[in-house]
Length: 191
Image (cartoon, rainbow, N blue to C red; front, side, top):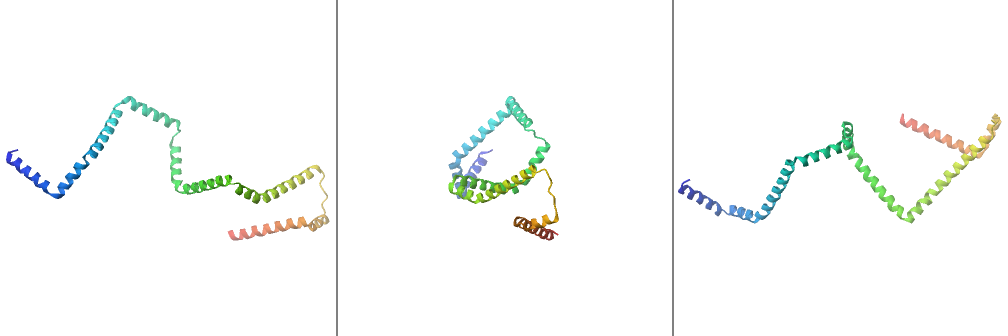
C-alpha cells in the first residue's frame, strides 16, 4: 500500500470517527470492554474444559459406561418409552387432578391438627357409625339364631299374612317398593 493510499485510508477513518453515531458506538464498546473480556474469558475457559474432557478418552469412557449401566438397570425398552409418552400425553389432564388432591391433602392435614374440626367430624359421623353398628349387630344375631335352629319352619299363607301386619315388615316392604320405583324411573330415563 502506498503512502497516499494509507493517508487516504487514515482520513476516511478519522472522518468516520468524527461521525457522532460512530463515536457513541465506539465509546459504548470501550465502556463495555471489561465485561466483554470477562464473557470471552468465561466462554474460552468453558470451551477449553469441554475440549479437554472430550479429548480425555478415559473420562469419556467412564461417563459412557456409567450411562450404559444406568440405562440397563432402568429396564428402559420400547414398552417403557411408549408408556412414558402416553403418560406425558395425559399430564395436562392429570396435573389439575393432582393439584386438587394436594389441596385436599393439605386441608386434611390442617383439619387433623385442629381439635374442634375433629370433634365436629366425629359428631357428624357418630350417628352413621352407630346405625351401621346396630345393623351389623342385628344381622349377626339373626345369623346366629338361624344357624342355631336346624329345622326349616312350616310356611303357610296365614303366617305370611300375619307377617304383613308387623310394622317392621311393612316398613321394609315400603323401602323395597320405593327402591323398585326409583330403579324403574332410572331405567326409563336411560332408555
